[in-house]
Amino acid sequence: MKNITSKRISRLAILCFILATTMVALRILDIHSANETASIQIAHSQLYPQKNTENIPLNYSSHQVIVNTQLGFPLVVDNRDGIVGKYLLNSGLWEQNISQVLNRLVAKGDTVVEVGANYGYHTIHVSQLIGDSGKLFTYEANDEVCHILNKNIILNDAQHNTHMRCLAVLDNFDKADFLTGYSNLGGSFVIGPHADRASLLGSEQYNGWKKKAVLSTTLDYDLKDLQNIDILRMDAEGAELAIIKGASRLIDASPNLKLIMEWDVSMLGRFGKVASMLDHLENKGFKFYFINEDSTLSQKNKFEMLSLPHCDLVLSRTTLQL
Image 1 (cartoon, helix red, strand yellow):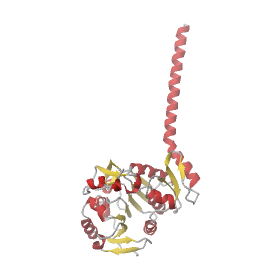
Image 2 (cartoon, one colour):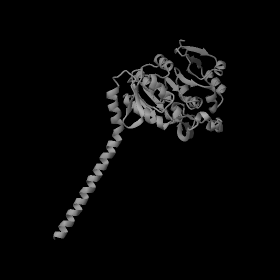
Image 3 (cartoon, rainbow, N blue to C red):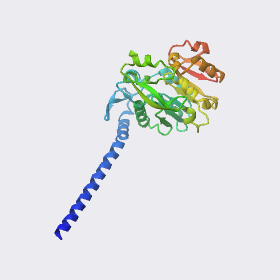
Image 4 (tube, helix red, strand yellow):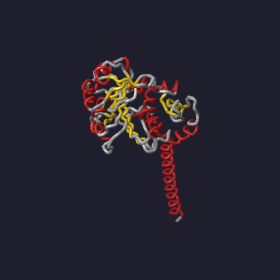
């Protein structure tokens, strides 16, 4: 009898041990999943009131630091990034002329699409400009940067009007070859179908960069439920040509649409004929405006566009104040 009772007690003890171990494991998983959000919330409460650009390492990554931008919001960046991250770390600013153009063109309640969000400097700015009644759909192809972008959306309480997609945006649904490196995370790009792949992959400029596959979508498919949009901002290292092609329905349905885009003829050439794209946009009624360093605009014709250096543009069917 004692042996039977002893065995029952032993079994009960084993079951209690298994149950307790399982509960502890589940609690650890729960803490792990909540840790990143909690860390961000703590960082938010500590850093958001500050207006200086002190860089404070986050406790979950030695490479990620928060900078307080001169636009008044905090932003997580990777301190290994030699371009966007470096500028933000040093000054708290990035592309002031673009920020000022956004101030003029984006209104409360607007529906905005952004392709190539990077860390989210312009993303958070636009989220604040459109307010609670606006909608922002933002895309970033680089999963490493997308992870930080998500943190910045949470950090700035922008989830209420900002919808993030970790996808490349092109004119097809496929896996695309993507080249990325820490020397310029914002310069990571899809290797277009017309690119000189051997030259790119062997270039000293991209020494140490890695090639990986990313999933792609089109705006016409991914935003098929939207009737129209007000702003399409693109900074996609040449993929703008493919993005526009894959958004033809959305562009046609948006008579007041403004395109704000990076412009580089050589990079755009990786995706097709730039002159043909200009003809296509002109036929749809768009005028071309060069964004000057002081954020003023200079109108250009399609022939001048082909000789422009690397720059940023606004395209609009309506005449814009220069």
